Amino acid sequence: MSEVLLDVKNLITAFDTDTGLMRAVDQVSFSVEKRQTLGIVGESGCGKSVTAMSIVKLLPQPSGRILEGRVLFKNRDLVPLESREMRKIRGNEIGVIFQEPMTALNPCHRIGKQLSECFLIHKNMTKKEAWEASIEMLKMVRIPAPEHRIGDYPHQLSGGMRQRIVIALALACRPDLIIADEPTTALDVTVQAQILDLIKEQQEQLGMSMILITHDLGVIAETCDDVVVMYGGRIVERAPVNEIFHQPRHAYTKGLLASMPHLETPRKSLLPVIPGMVESLQNFVIGCRFCQRMKRAGATTRERPPYREISPGHWVEACPQCVEGI
Image 1 (spheres, rainbow, N blue to C red):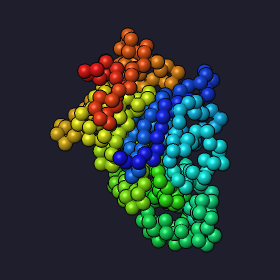
Image 2: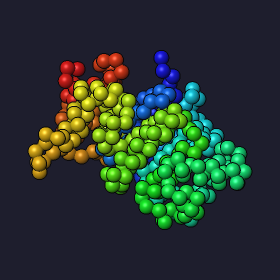
Image 3: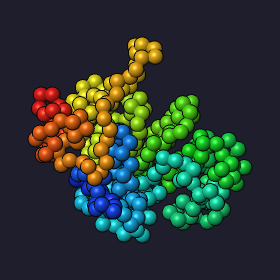
Image 4: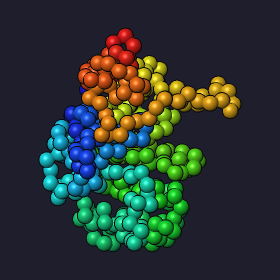
């Protein structure tokens, strides 16, 4: 049996707004085993990034808070921990690759200072040791001329270079878990491939687990072991990657897969799209939220469908309108 590194149980995260408390993550549960890569996929606004930031407790303050649930990391619940205790875990045991490198890096400090802080805080190194370790990290992520680049400011680097710096920051202390939130956003296709290859290579070398959040189903197919499909702040389907692609059960998962172009797709043809849009948080129904989007009235929108295991390791939100044979 593989050892579970992270176990998220019935997580509920909400934000205080002018119209009241809005749930952005609604009873989400999943686990990540050691050396495993879990992909989280879904449209914008479905709760992927909020779920990730809830794990490391980096929610916007004071509006964001975890209402219920447990986040067990190495059998230790992170939810009740104070900020001081979480700072010992973030960066040291859990690394985060943020979505936008220009906002993840401090524009007022040189790259070397930002990298060195990781080693000074978590590894108790001297300044000289931290500086040398920072240069080694730049070499690891294949930054050319690291002895010179370490003195640059973020704005002096290209988008791909900045993303490599963010990866170096996340990997600096050899964490057990990496959370990569859209790590290739706004990068061209060639650089995207290089960044993903780099992350995968370092993951294998260091023996880390990873949560990969992305819109790109092609990346999910190549990189992940298991996949979580989120919609409306909930998990609608969770399964091994091969089963998701070859035997999807939920209508939303099928819609996402159908929107992908294939080699046999005729040139200049329109791709299928999922009708409607994701509702705002304040308009979500209690029941099946994909039925709400598809304008289906009735019991499915009034009562939340049960979460069922339909085959070993394959779970689905069992709405009879969205899942055939339930």
